[in-house]
Length: 122
Length: 425
Ligand SMILES: Cc1cc2nc3c(=O)[nH]c(=O)nc-3n(C[C@H](O)[C@H](O)[C@H](O)COP(=O)(O)OP(=O)(O)OC[C@H]3O[C@@H](n4cnc5c(N)ncnc54)[C@H](O)[C@@H]3O)c2cc1C
Image (cartoon, rainbow over all chains, first blue to last red; front, side, top):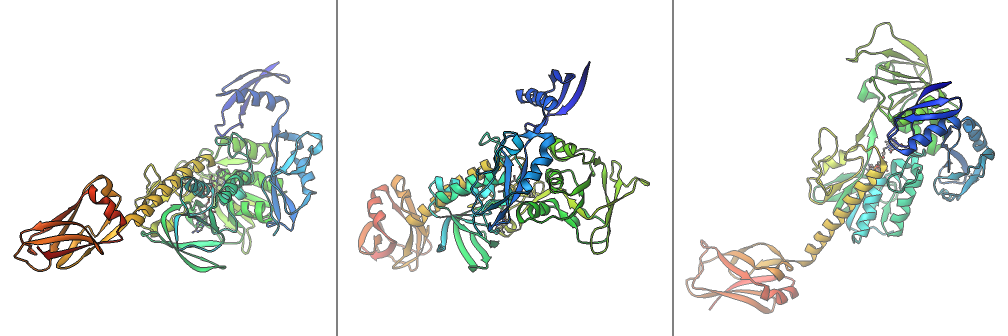
C-alpha cells in the first residue's frame, strides 16, 4: 500500500521539504526537492538512514585534553550510540595528526573515524 | 620572534576572517603581516565547532570546523605570517596605533600601515534578554558550553533546558545528548525555528528532543545552582499566557539567543557602526570610514556560512595590503620642502617624488620680508641648484609660485629634501 511521508532534506543548509511516496520499503516518488541530492537523500532515509558523527576522544599529553574526531562517511543511524560507546574507550597519545585514523571500520560499518585536527604535545 | 615597531598589515583576531585576511595580504605582497589573537592558538570559534558542515562552498567537502580552520592556519604559517597569541588588543587609534597586552610581552605598542578588524561576534547573555528569577550557577550561553564540552572536557550539567532555537543551541542539544546528558526541552519565543531546519532534523528530531515554539523561560529557580526553570507559553505580542506555566526540573539552562558583532575596539578607533548590523559601515573593499582600517567576518555582520567569511577576509586582506603598499611607497618617496632664506612657508609641505614623473608640481610660498629689486627663487637640494624662477620683486602680501616640471624628476629623485631660498639677482 502506498503512503506519503514528509521529510526534510539535510544534505545542505537549504533544508528542502520533501514528500516521499513509499510502498513498503520502496520509494515510488519524491517531490519538493530542488536538486538531485534530495532524491538520493529520500531513498537513503527511507531504506538506510545514516548520519555523520562528530565527537571528541581523550588524548594523553595533548595541548588540550580532547581531540575532535569525525566519521569520514555517514554511519547507520541506529548505530550512533554504539559508535559513541566505542569512541569513549579510545585514548590517543599526543602528538596526533589531522586525518589520522582513530577507529578503522568502526563496528564493521566500513567507515573510518579520523582526527579533525592536529593535537600537539602540551 | 622579535616584534617589529611597524607592520604593513596587523589583523586582529584569527578566526576564518582574520586568517583569510592575513593570507591574502601576504599573497598581495605585504611584507610584514601580524595576527594578534587573545586565545592560545589560531582558528577562532571554529575550533570548538567540531560538527561537520563547513567548507561545502570553498572546498566542496563536508569538513568539521577544526579541519577547516587548520587549512588556513597552515597556510598562514607557511607564508610567514607573524603571530602573537594569548594577547589581548586593548585599544586602537584612528592613526592606526595598536595597544595590546599579554603575560609574556607585557604592554605592547605597535603601529601599522593597515589594520584588519576580525574580532568576530559574541553571544547574547542573560542580562540582554532579561530573564527574571534568582541568579544561580548553571546558566550559560550555548557557546560557552560548546567550548567546555568540545575543547576543555567539562560537562555543564546532566539535565538541560535550552532557550532559543538557534543553530548553536540545537547543535549543543545533540552534543550533550552524545555525552550522556538529558536535554529536556528546547524553548523558542518566536513562532518559528530561528536556526536551520536541517539542524532541527539531525539534532532534535533524531534524538526525540522536544521543541516548543512560542515558549520562553519565565523564571529561573534555585539558590546556589539551577534546580528548575518555569517555562511558559506566550502570545504573538510575547505576553505570558496565564495558566500555561510549567516547572521543568533541570540543572543547566543554555541560552542560544543570537550573536552580536564584537566592536568595542572599532568604536575606539573612530569606526562608524551601522545600528542595524551592529558592525562597521564598510565599502566594497571592506574599508571602514577610517583610512587604512578594514573589517571582515562576523565583526561586520553575522554570517550563515563560514565560506563567505573566508571570502570577505580575502577581499579585506587584499585591499589592506594594497593600502599598506601605497603608504610605504609614500613614506619612501615623500620628501619635505624646507623654507630657506626669506621664505616664510611653502605649500605643500612635502611632495611625493614619483608624482613629478608624470606631471608638474606647483610650490606656493610667501616671503618673510619685502625685496624691492629683482630676485631668484632658487630650489636646491643641499648643493645643487635644481631650478630657479626670476621675479622683479617679492612682497609678503603677494604669494609666489615655483613650478617643478617632469624635466626636474631626475634631480629631484636624488634629493632627500628640497630647500627654497630667495636671493638677489
Ligand atoms: C559559539 C559560536 C558557535 C558558532 N557555530 C557555528 C557553526 O556551527 N557553523 C557556522 O557556520 N558558524 C558558526 N558560528 C559563526 C562563526 O562565528 C562564523 O562562521 C565564523 O567563525 C566567523 O569567523 P570570524 O573570523 O569572523 O570570527 P571568529 O571565528 O569568532 O574569530 C574571532 C577571533 O577574534 C579574537 N578576538 C576578539 N577580540 C579580540 C581582541 N580584542 N584581541 C585579540 N583577539 C580578539 C577571538 O578570540 C577569536 O579567535 C558560530 C559562532 C559562535 C559565536
